[in-house]
Structures are given as structure tokens and as C-alpha cells.
Image 1 (cartoon, protein in one colour):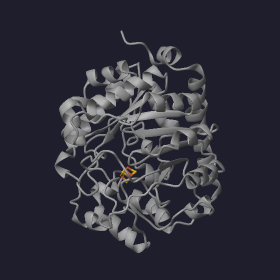
Image 2: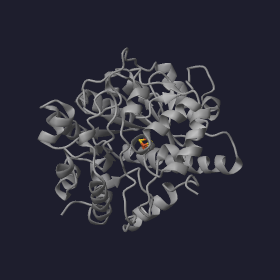
Image 3: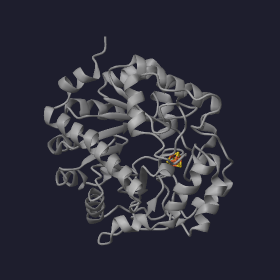
Length: 399
Ligand code: SF4
């Protein structure tokens, strides 16, 4: 029988790292959420509790449907800008930061950056191919980083998405290295037609736990970027099946946490960007609603007031005000032309680096996403009901 997550944390993770995770990711997030709620209640300048930062537009892979690649002149974020964003966000009680790319581990200075920001906690979104034992040792030394390794399927379905035959083994090897170094580790999978039968199944969940994952984050594939591959997007019945699977697995599986950022405790769809709980800053410093929505009317720099820059964004404000009145789902998927119009109305510019984002929006046919049809499927596992109730609900966005 698989060990419970509590036993796994006590036996598989270094105690210092576990404490940092509990205080940095756990209590740190609670603190940021409470501060966010206070800001809303008191009508204080807007600032999201969670900030996702893409530190580079470069990647060692070329995955179909990825928004992050294809920039004409891909850039890396400067270290001083990342430092400034983290320091300024901390003034708004943020303690937890998502670090994305492209592939963040292409930046050699990143592990040292984590080491020099001990009072913050970082979730490192990585494909794992560059996560060597040397890097893992550095992450262990700083102790405030949880690698979230993308495993986009099994052998064949992984290769189809990633376009690399050996990638699956490299990703599993990264998971193994994290286990060796007693890191708090997650696996992320964006579910599509191509990998649905591989990853929406009990033995995939159990295998990821056995290989060292302490949490498993299910995303829904959002066709984006220069090679969107719309055919690989889930249909409504598959989304519904995925939702039911997640709810059932949360009752059955005790050896890891199953994460989603799509539904509240009742099974109603939510959009984190429309709720204002998270926004994204790209490698140039452009502030976007979320990673795949690549347009922006404001840019942060290494000496400016990050809080005021974000609070004064008319595009982000209108996005939070208007989108919830239109959809509970993903406006990129179900109302792309409306999104283009909204960007136009608030002078948001293309921040993709491809100069094609608005054309891509115009060419997209509206598709359903996580706002599945039919009766909402509520959480049944008590711990997740409570977690969703207090930490992932509408924050008033949907009335
Ligand atoms: S717009 Fe879509 S991709 Fe962006 S946060 Fe909302 S649901 Fe997620």
C-alpha cells in the first residue's frame, strides 16, 4: 500500500526543506491571500497574491501548442529585474513565486538567485531536461524551491507533444534526481486528446507518486502560440471526465496532492486571472493576465514602482471587471475575438515577441474549455472542499 503523503514528507524530504515548504508555500500563500482580501475590502491598490514570472523566452524544446516559444529575438530577464519584482511583491505580502520560461534552467544564475532569496519560496516550472544532480544539489542547499516537472504523457504521447523521443526518460530522470535530493517535487501535465488515455488513469497517478512526486498538477491543454495544434484540445465530454477523475482520485489517493486551478469546491469553473489571484510577468517585464494571454499595457522595470504599475493597468482592471461577466471559463478559448477587442479598447500591445498574437486570436475558433457543460461536479474529499472553500473561491469576481 502506498505511503500517505504525511509519511512521505517525513521520510522523503529533508526536514529543513519541509519546514521551508510549509512556511513558504503553505503559510506564505495564506498570508498573501489574506492580504489580497484585505486590499479588496479596503479598496486599496490592486496587487495579485500570486505572481508568475517567465525568466526567459528561450527553451531547449519545441512543444506543439506552447505559447512561450517563437519570439523573434528571445530574451532572458535580467537578474536585477527579477530581484526587483520579488522584493516589490513582498511589500504586498507575496511570499510564493512561480518561475517559468521557456526553460528557466537555461539561466545559470537562477539557483544562486534562489539562494539569495531565502525568505521567499519558488515553484520552478521545468521540463526537467537540464535538471542535473549539480542543479539539484544547489536547490537542496537553498531549500526554498519546489521543482514542478512537466510530464506531458507517457513514451509515445510525450514524444508527440514534445517532439523529442528521449524526452520522457529525461523528465523521469529529473524526477528521480529530485527524489534523491529529498526535494519537495511536483509533476505537471497538460491534458490533451493525445495523452488523455495515458494520464487520466489511476496507475499514472500512482506511478508519479512512486517516482517521487508529492503533488500532481492537472492542466488542460490550451492550444497557443505559433503551432497551436487545435485538434489536440479536449472536447467537453473529456473535460467532464477529467473533472470527475480528479474528484474521485482526491478521495482514493492519499500519497500525493492533486492540484487544479480551474474549479471551486462546487465544481464551478473559475479563471485565476479574471479573479485577480494571479498575473504573469514575461521576460521583458510586460504584465499580462496570464502566460498564454500575450498582450499588455504596462511593463515593470528594475527601478520603477511595480505595485503602482500593476495597479494602474487599465487593461488588467478591465480584464478582471469584464471577463467574469462574460464567461466562467477561459476567455482565450471561448471568446478570443472579444479578448482582442478588449485589448484594443485598452491599448494593450502584443507582448508575445512573435508579433502575431492578435492575428492568432482572430484566427481562433471559439472552443469550450474547463467550463464544462451540465451539472457542476463538486468536491467530495473533505480536505479539498476546505482548501477550495477558503483558498480558491471566486473572491467576489463572479458575484
Ligand atoms: S484566461 Fe484562461 S489560461 Fe488565462 S488564467 Fe484564465 S482560464 Fe487560465
